[in-house]
Image (tube, rainbow, N blue to C red; front, top):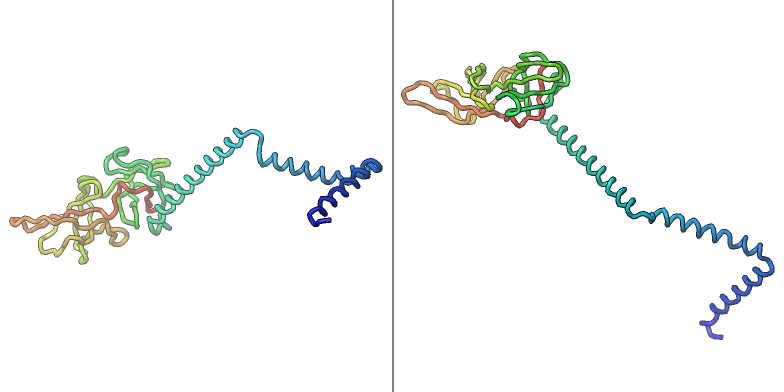
Length: 239
C-alpha cells in the first residue's frame, strides 16, 4: 500500500467506527460531540459581536467617538494655550489673576474689561506679560473690572528714562505708546528703556525715535510699549 493512501484509510476507519458507535451507542456519541458543538456556538456568537448585523449603527458609533475625540482635543489645546499665557505673566504669587473679557474696539478706547478671580480695588496697578505694568484699575464692579492704560491719550505718568534713571513725565498718546520731553544733553539714545514706579522701577517701553529742533533745548522721545496691551489674554492685578 503506497504512503499516500494511508491517511485516507485512517479517515475511513475512523468514520466507520463512529458510525458503528452511533448505531450501537447513540448516547455516547452525543456526549462526545457536545463539547465540539458548544465551542462552535461560542465562536459563532463571538463573530456576531465583532461583526454587528447593522452597519449603520457601527458607523454612527464611530462618528460619535470621532466627534468626542475632536472635542477632547480642542479642550486640551485650549487648556495648554491658557497655561502658556498664564506662565508668561511671570510671578503672580501676590497678585490677582484676571482674564480679559473685552478690548478695544469692543471696550472703551485704551481700556480692558477683565474678570478677576477675586475682588480688586480701584487704583490697583495692573501687569501684563513678564510683569510689565500696563495701567491701573479705573472701575471695580462685582465680577469684572476696567483697566485704564497708562498710555491713554493725555494721561500723565511720572517715571524714569535710560540707564541713569533720568526723571521724566510720560504723556500717553494711545495704544500703549508715550511721548517724553528731555533735554538734549540727557544722553538718551534709541533703544533705552523707560520705567514707571512698580515697586521700584519697572520697564514699560523703549525709545523708538528721538526728534530734535535746532531752536529748542529739548528733545522729544517717542516710546513704544514693551507689551502690546491689545494682545493680552490674561493680566495680574496687585492686591
